[in-house]
Picture 1 (cartoon, rainbow, N blue to C red):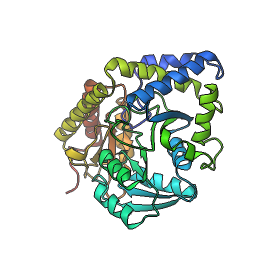
Picture 2: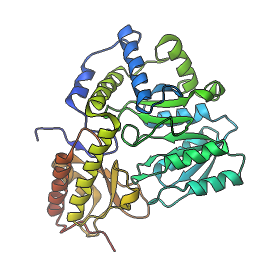
Picture 3: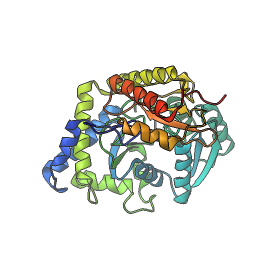
Picture 4: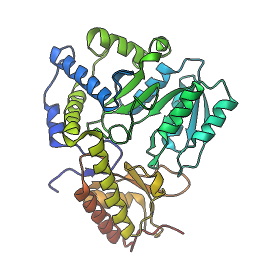
Length: 372
């Protein structure tokens, strides 16, 4: 094979050659050139959500989950109470990390194939005034379902509750406008829809709550308030930054802007999703979600009902043809997931469908029809 495998996952993603080449230079973390790159990336990320007037941008080393944990620890007081409307694996993760940091968490199970309910959330908030914050997963990557951020934010604002948004798989593609949607913190990462490489998260923090965040975090390395104060004073990261990841992200943002920004990126991902779903349907596969709740980020498919199907064999067969798939995260039914994001287009999606067809044939499976 004359190319790297295409990553049909929710991150890490397939990146462009330009993004890869950006990592070939070493940078000093205190050097003025690197400080300038940090400042530029922070400003351009704010511009994507029109947040320069209302928010600050705090980057953090590590995976996106590091930044979700840092956001909860920084924004939620130690005696705070967090509500999580749970319709998937990443909601459960948010609740668990909240509890591990000593914050109280109430988890409300919802159907995993449906968006969470703003109305149900409002009932819970009204019934328990001790709840101070809500954590919302914008796009629940465990299934691909899109949760209603504007409606949830409106309820939180009306009732005076803080909102922390995990926008890991949505930022840079799905609409998020800080001028229209109020959030205390919104978290994303370098290796998702911006098509950088993994290794860096970032958090938009609302300026109005910044002073109240001092001293909330029980962690030295993950205190976003301290990170922000230090960065504003020096332009530098408090601890060794992921230099190569940051400059790759800077280059990826340049390509994002050249493509036409968020609207153009969403259009490409939407086209990818359409080609994928139509092609897989022709092979007999059925998506888990109804089209109206499916985000064009990652699609969960029911596994074939054929007795010869086994995900590991299916995965290896697709990999041998140049495509990396993703296992399912559901417990009730067997599924697998196919991502629509990254530096790929409709041609790659058509090739992926052909690779799936060939993989089924190799396994002796006539089609992808699920049980029932």
